[in-house]
Image (cartoon, rainbow, N blue to C red; front, side):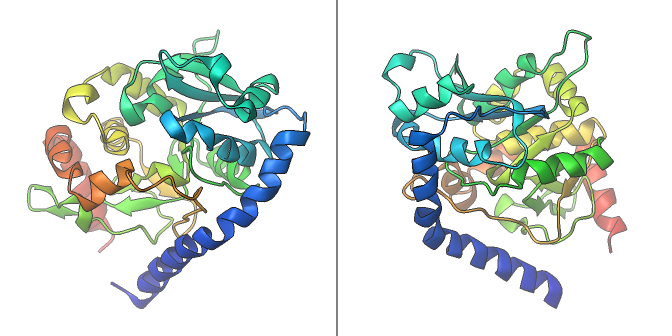
Length: 298
């Protein structure tokens, strides 16, 4: 690892640790905004922002949504997916106020982390047969005001790529992929099949990837029920779509306190749950494309 890459990874780690300190400070004005403003959560950004939440996390998801709604660019639609059977009228008052301001609260079957992208595929279809792009967000992250603006600005110049704030480098070992824990955080803004967007900091899904995900169907339920990032990456690689991190430094925005203890991140990375899903998903064709891009960088 080069000194520059090591420095960027240390900076990203420091940003994550600093986020734990500043998150309560950021939440205070967002709480006041929730109680006082009547500003619509939507705007003229030609994109759908999609996220999901469940259980006790619904008590705090309004902070993440308020952060998105306070951005310099607001999406054309902002959709929160909740489990079927959840009674909308019994949701926290802060969410109901957001609903009054244009937040769409939609029920969907419980398909785990895929709830933020698979139901959005149908919503992205336009009357002319095209698709509106989708940006996914997490329910426990406090996004900066320029978050959506920067994603859309980069997508406008490179519409055929998957754009993200945080990615990992996919590592090939022989004819297969290395364990996920060995995939380092990305420190390059060069696009490649050997980059995988991680959803925590936000991912821009171009229409071509939405088409490919729709065509791929529901195979994820058997092969990768808890690894939406992996399924989306494999689908992108097969479709010929590369991933690009917005800058060399991977971003880790502040997280809402108390939401990560039993998270998907913990089981998939720290407990190795991603590895059998990787083995089930990635075809020889996809691995060959990943390897070719990785070798081209050497």
